[in-house]
Structures are given as structure tokens and as C-alpha cells.
Image (cartoon, rainbow, N blue to C red; front, side):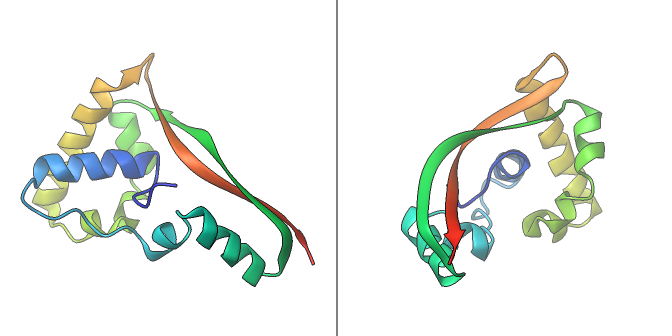
Length: 126
């Protein structure tokens, strides 16, 4: 539902804003934007050959480990986040520090739990 994404994408966006407050936020991936609108998502489903398309908004929960384990678990995802991938090693280290601070502030019992609105589309094959 949110063009910036959910879960780790929310944390990355917040970390980038805190480290580079004067930079404009990175553009969300094209697919995130296209499918974040219920009408566009329904149209895309129909174009893919589905009928009886229904789109509803639900709340999704993402959970991951807190602390250094968070960075370890997501080290393969972060390079796919364009703004992070474009940074040099020094910039990535600063963003990683900001991520750890964010995760530390939102963790409970060793885990980070994030909720975000999600569009769920269902349909039947024609």
C-alpha cells in the first residue's frame, strides 16, 4: 500500500533520512508505485488474465531479529535498495549505525515488529 514498502524498507528509509537529511528520499521501485494503488492493482490483475478481482487493504506484520542480527539477516537485501547500494563503504557504515539505532529503539524481546498496510488482490483465472 505504501510506495516505499514495508518492513525493512521502512527502516532503511528512516535510516537514510537520518544520515542524509538534505537528500531527497529515494524514489520507490516502479512496481511499488504501480501496485500501491487499489485500482491500478486490480487493473494489473485483470490484464494478467484474472477475473472476479477483489482488492482489499489488510495490515501485515513483518518481524526480524534486533541488534547486529538484524544487519546480518538483511545483508543480502540491502544491496538491492538503490540508495544504499549507491553509497561508498563509509556511507553504508553510517547508515548501518542508524539502522541499529532505529532497530534498538523499536525492538521488543530481541525482535523488531513492524506493521504496515498491504493490498491483497485475489482473483480467478479466466
